[in-house]
Amino acid sequence: MNIEAYIQSLSVGIEDKGNVSESEDSLRAVLKGLAIELWSDSQGRLWLVADEADAAKLGEPRGTVYTAAEARHVVTIADPGTGAEVHRWKRAFDGRVHDILPTKKAKAGGLE
Image (cartoon, rainbow, N blue to C red; front, side):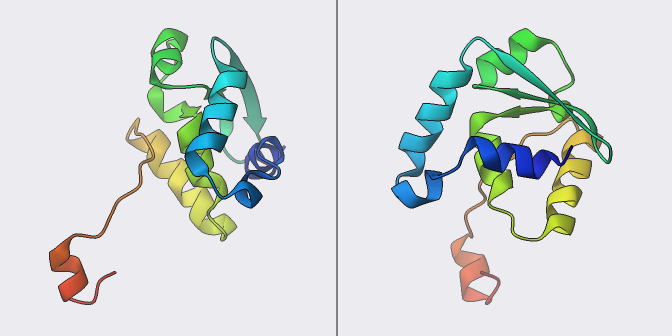
C-alpha cells in the first residue's frame, strides 16, 4: 500500500477548502481516540492518530506515528522521493514533522 496515496485519500477536498486549521480539526475529530495502522512495503508499519495525546497513548515509537497535522504536512510534498526521505528521517530520529518558517537571516541571505 502506498502510504502517501492513502493519507491523500483521507484528505480529499481539504486543499479546496482553503482553511488548513479547519481541515486539520476535521481529521483530528474523526481520529480522536483511535489509531489507524497502515502498512507500506517500503516504509513498514505506520500509525495515524489525531494528535500528540493519542500518539503518547499508543505507545509506539514516535517515528512511526503520524498525527493529523503531520499527515497534512506530508501529503503536500509533491515529490515522492522527498516524501520517502521525510519518512526515513522521521523513523531514524523518532521525530515529528513540523513547519519550519524561514528566519530573517535566511531571507536576507536568499535562502527562502
